[in-house]
Length: 208
View (tube, rainbow, N blue to C red):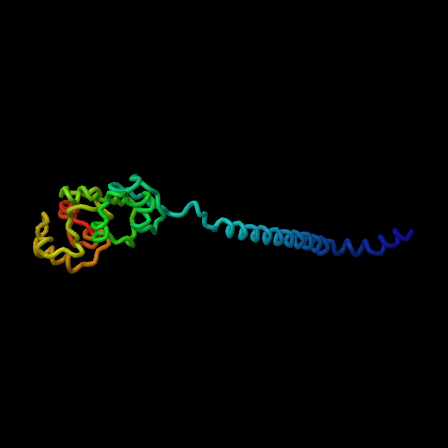
């Protein structure tokens, strides 16, 4: 009986205001879905941030390396993989050090052991026998550190530079004015000489 009274009392009110009532119920449903969606989005965003932070860590195995060829009077000649910022001294260590026959006086005079190496550098260590016999050690690389009867573009005189094929007094003065050089490639990169001249002299010059 009580239920019938309640229905009789409120049914006309519900019937009269059914549209606002339905809209109110739908509004509550959408509001609830909105809260659930917001919570889920925040959770996903937090997980993404953690993932990105984790993936940004540098893997030591991916550190950059260079390849250097060490030949001549060393304990173990060959091509060695070294860290990018390695110096000439590091290349000597990788090759097991200098052999007993190495011309140490020549090395002390012509090598800066603190010089940074670049990828593809070839280092040739002459022996005492080569120095005594007056054997010319060939230039074995177009860039980096080389040994032999080469003209050092950092210290040679104008007349010595002028003796190079394709290099006249004007170019020799430009080379001198551009000192110091870390690599012979800088002659081309800094437009001290053109491509043709560089191709003619690259096997006859060095830097140290």
